[in-house]
Image (cartoon, rainbow, N blue to C red):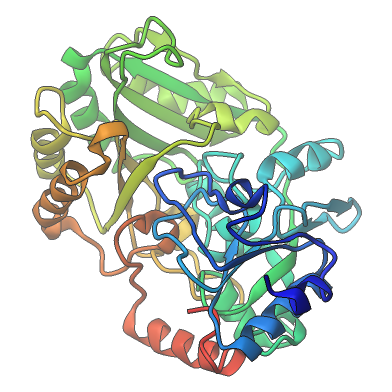
Length: 437
């Protein structure tokens, strides 16, 4: 037991023999099992400082766990620093800026903002951790209307690899500020972020569900429609293969469907007109698209909220056409035997293609679509990776040169060469010993 570390922090310090260790280190993605030498539950920035300095002195690596939605590789040694207790959220309504702790989820932020008629720009799941989402850039159901969420960061409190606490903003440590907005890992431990909120007084959003026999017509029609979609309507089309299990609503169990997701800030009449061509593609057996309070934006995608095992791979695409639809359907459509419970094409671009003020390290601004493959249950072994690799190879003609880390899943994130080189330089400056891996 690292007794010296226990005396340095106020939060729990646990090893594998201690009660509560397994729960402390478990990520949301239960396909990953963490087994660090020691877990430290941070309760303050000073706890983070102490853990970082101790790890540096011991010459062991340090990893960070907030919610662990995006966990892909297990931590098997060194220190695992958990930040879930740093979940405080406060708001300056006059400035429209929220101060958010490293362990907070969007579900902690949204109600506080909503009381003042404000909202963050969250991801499709509001159950994920705010900081991890922002560090990758953050591209959710408002991608086309509001762009990358990280573009709204005002400043961050960061503990560097040497245990120094710095404020990163456009005025202080601007190189680190640039890197943290999209650079994701290896830059320090963020303990707090100040995020500029926005106002979306009206939202037309929800989902259309189509039967398996209509998947091809709807997917092809939707993909053609995206070429003329207005700049504020964000949509995605997901082929969902629902298992026949109790948590699934009875009317969806065992069915393969196409779920068309829609989010359009603005009034009902404009939203209905913009999405009318989608409703005309085929009869939907379930239509939830309508006026939706922005605080309930998680209902658009209805992502699972309970922890469980999953496997994800993403691919960013530079363009889409009917050949893409044909290829996609031949790989993951109904009747293909695809191992994926979800295969989604998400239409992005729009405001997501606009550079952040002062620029940032975000990868994927040139993409027009994001392809995501999700497996769960028995398919987590070799079936999903092999099938995903076949999809990736088949999509090569459409693949963009970048891959955002939040969508990469089991693949490696890809920045353009100039950004990658600059990120390496920033990491060397703020983590010279490579403590964060």
